[in-house]
Image 1 (cartoon, rainbow, N blue to C red):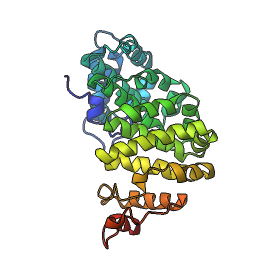
Image 2 (cartoon, one colour; image 1 turned 60 degrees about the vertical axis):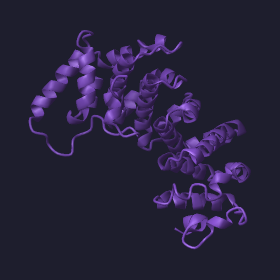
Image 3 (cartoon, rainbow, N blue to C red; image 1 turned 90 degrees about the vertical axis):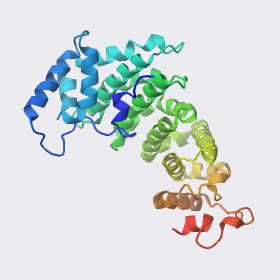
Image 4 (tube, rainbow, N blue to C red; image 1 turned 45 degrees about the vertical axis):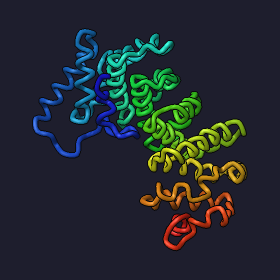
Length: 322
């Protein structure tokens, strides 16, 4: 198996970085930008493109305003899209190789750079470029090449939603992003599940997104079913990072009166008892979210069922009072 793609080795799960200015002025700034410009030019040359993709994805945080350079350079975005569509034929049946996956992930890392930059993110959105990534999110193979591809694609979407913007949410809701995220939340790796759940969380935190999910019972229960299944799986393989986003999704759903009524009967029992007490012990913010969620849905805790956890200084009692 090839090494982890550069796009995954230096990114945060939620689409950080990109072409923004560096915190301090780097020595040899002019030389670096000249190097960046040459590498961007090389993207349009099929013979030099693979190396340019690798070098730019590795060093993109060092290149100031790389995103506008990528967007405004003739033929560059078309070259990146060409890399993406070139592997569509190997998605089904799944024949994606590690080399192909790494190369496309490097192209996606540059698109994430464009999606992250304030000067290019809306241009990126208005060009409907996220739609080119959806076939990667629609795959079901759990092999590493496919998982890297899903994760890096989610990073691009995550970069868009990281900045609160109703226009971004409205665009995504006009596409099939919700079912695609739900698919990943069910079958992806822990990291892919975390990024996909973060995207759903950001959509829910927008009023337009919350209304969309809660408008029909089908949408609400589709989201609720997947969240519930994830809670059940976390009881066996805990992840405080993933659990945090799941609880935040539930809490936001409880802000809608109809959804709150439904949660009274469908909120997982494992969120009502001490199942995740140890997982949340070091996370007071998520404990407060869970406390507020239980308050919102009017949960009456069965004292007999959690009696062993209601000891002073620990268990469910400890989780609620902190």
